[in-house]
Length: 490
Image 1: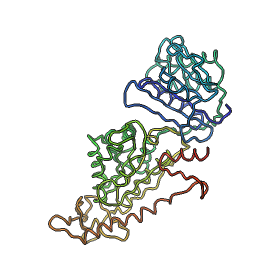
Image 2: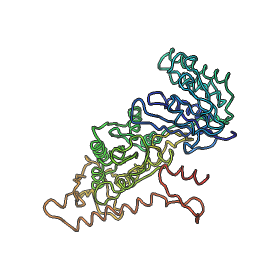
Image 3: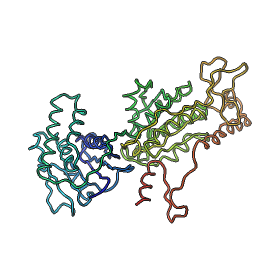
């Protein structure tokens, strides 16, 4: 198997440490300068069910989690049954030989069985993960020292007994594999260049901070929840106010309120929560309040598939709230774009005084990937935010050629105005309390919609990759882009 990449799968029941095992292997590869793409498929249960994490590693950039595995680490018999047929010839399966019986005739052609007597090696079934990682280090000709260093870092806070037990288990797994098995035949050449290893949601959160976001509100809903988790850990050091709201309606209204008073604000949710937010998104459109909303899509309709990816919310995002009003919809396809587009979203929101929606999905939001770096310095453009107003009446919603009005925050001298969600005139006074003013309605609608001409200039035209007159054209957006590109190369 002379290749420049390999794929490792880790499977078991929820609660057995699949994610920690897979993430440990991914970190080892990342820290050795290899490129990594990892995707964790999990269930909506705390324990039980089936969890599967697939890690693709390469000497070159890898942009999907791939297909067939070189090695499967099976933490239970169910994983052997489900994934044995997904191992390529020359690969193998690591498993606890004291719990799982795997006869030679059960193995697909060219697939090896790497049984590990866990209780003999560690006297503790909880060490199966670490024993398997140790054995994997030998099979892939990777350094046991690197694994031991990671174990000390990972378990250091739990005390010396835990660290020592895991070090002993990793060494035992490595030694047993060395005594009983041969190298797998795949050895990647590490560049010894450390790379960032993060998820799409982490990139969104960091991009927001880089862009000057100072307020984040949310109600937990997978797969957007980990944005809030990141802010819970880092908000204080980054100067961000984090509010966990009682529901999505409260979360979006908190963010709109923060945006109204001049704070760069963001909220995040998934499809069901986004449905609850749409009236308040329209509120931001009518009051011309900058706001950034992340919709990390999952399966629908309703609460649908809480832990599975889907891209079915496009029309919901395009038509968020009733009526027509300018909004921008950004759909990143990579970790780097998730970071850059989040920063860009805040600029667009303030330049054009409108809501901006970031269309992510579970795959983009939750997968982990190596990136070479992210530019921490990003341009910040606060648009028509004014610092003062000359003598004369202030018109918050002044009709301008661009549709963008001079924006003052509450409390600024000489800029008293009404911000109503009803249709209003240039000074904010509503036009429908006693009688309707059709001319003003048309004027204000046209004024707001003119912003679209400017927003369109912020984005490049769609690009066609490959031959201009191909027999087949694949169309996609967001996280499907990487799969489409890889299919084109196949």
